[in-house]
Length: 101
Image (cartoon, rainbow, N blue to C red):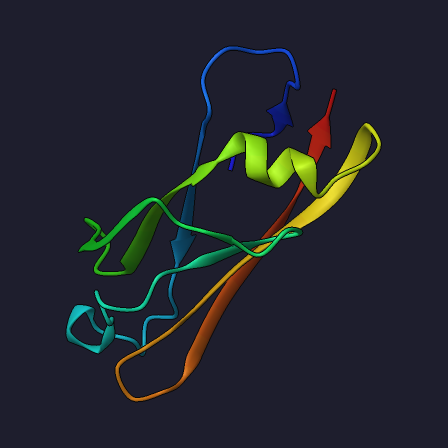
């Protein structure tokens, strides 16, 4: 997720990347599960996973900026959360602080 999200900037996509713990393999990831970004419980428009050069698994997801910003009433710092479910039912999640302006 970018560090700054501009309400008036062009484009309506926000891309988020979550690094899964090393104990999770690419075969554990469920491509049928759609990651969710909060606040706003925004479903990913597109998503995928891949193995990075260090062996870790990364989940890459694209979300609607408009949908996210509709859930955030004021500008300033806000924590956003991405979560999803693996094939065996375990959850994965990541969060970061972004500035809305």
